[in-house]
Image (cartoon, rainbow, N blue to C red; front, top):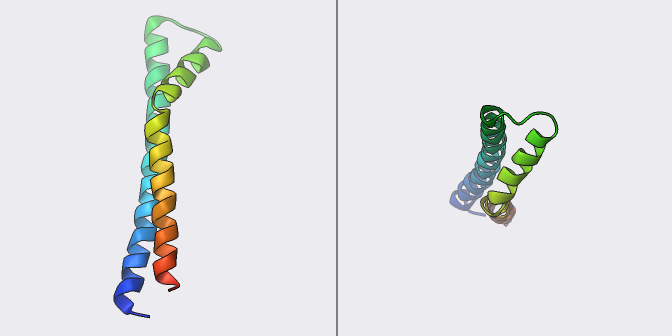
Amino acid sequence: MDVTSKMIGIGAILAGFVLWAIDYLVFTAIGALTAWIAEAVGITGMAVLGVQVVGWILTLGIMVLLLVFGLYLIIAGLGLLFE
């Protein structure tokens, strides 16, 4: 086992976790933005949650892409680490 491949594996695992952190950041930012838009328009109650869900659905593709790519990096990094 080469030390370089282990270092690359650890880097890939960390990159995967960073992508998951970015995914969480996007998720919370979209929720906050849509809640702010709903408040600015004057929507109240559970309708705010509906607006947030619509915002999350609109960005669902990028969030799933970041989730899957992060998982791929973690698995590839583990493969390199335990090679």
